[in-house]
Image (tube, rainbow, N blue to C red; front, side, top):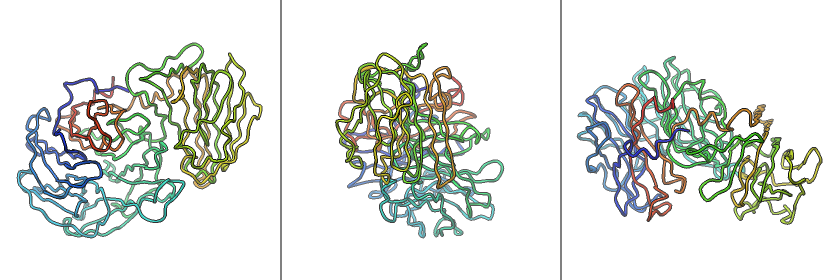
Length: 514
């Protein structure tokens, strides 16, 4: 993955002030080329106080004005739109406010909107009949242990009076175990509307996408995209390609961008924690992963969606030194030179109470071993070189059953070499089967992400809530500015959930081609 993290000339601070948690920006380019950035000022991520602010740039994002206050006590996740000529609007879920400007954002009038009692609204889209369309979500219903939280309802709303009143006309999603939320929509050249949604189970589910061919009244079944992240901001570039900026959650932290077509977006892609810098070495014996203070490569594979019904296989041909390897299906397994054993940090104890803490499965040392984990509706079998070594019965109705990983042991020291990895998920609920076959001769396991995703700013040491909500604008053909909040987890004084500032990064289409 190409990264702009260290390219200081690309980055500009929009607002950074001690004692303030500055976050959740959106960006808009006016017809005369001025950039507007609206964002929230608060004391921390879950705020006791907040304001809605606006900053401007007259030089393409290189410098920004001191902030202007739009609201003294409200502000959350604002979104700019221009659904009709000569009227720029800014919609915000805090207090259900809708701001309007008729002079390209220099002055604003404040009003209320009704009928959309959901959070984090998307940009507003004008429909051919003159009505407006948006989408927002809320969590409601009973806690679902498979998702680890309450379900999310992503509603689609239409207004026929220019945003004053809204009615719900559809719901995106449908699978109760997928927490689909924070949707972003855009109109495609063929007339369809595309929506891209965050999945919030925190098990490396990808973002999902869905289409409407009737202006938002009905939607296709959600499909997995190649992107893992939160709060996508989706739109069409001037040359009719899709651009998405979003919080990277797969599994490295930071703000990233993806540029491409629908065909490029389709289908899950393996993500790794190594986003920039040297790639793990491909040796004649396989992919070499080393644990160090700076790098413990982990690869996030396609998770299970319903572990109560699903069946899955994870097989790897691997050799470790020290305690250098990790495989996860059902639970995590530490792989050493001579044995494999459950890896159960405190956060893994719930749902794994019956796993013997002293379980150790011998491995023939100084050779590659084929380790196969077979999961079947909560029953996990462990096979080494085609010999069954252990059977565990796990509570299937638990969100931790879903995650599937391979890579370096996050709590051990050593190395691991990987020659082959094979995964197969069978989901009876959806009648879908997913297969991934990899061998070291094919190159890096996460090659697709490395080739197609651009890292704007890494933030791996920050809490994930402190970075990655974004907005973007195209300033010239194939030249873009993205505004986003950034924790700066590697800087002195950083406090999780209490430190964040708003910055801008300039990038272009050519950055994706490196």
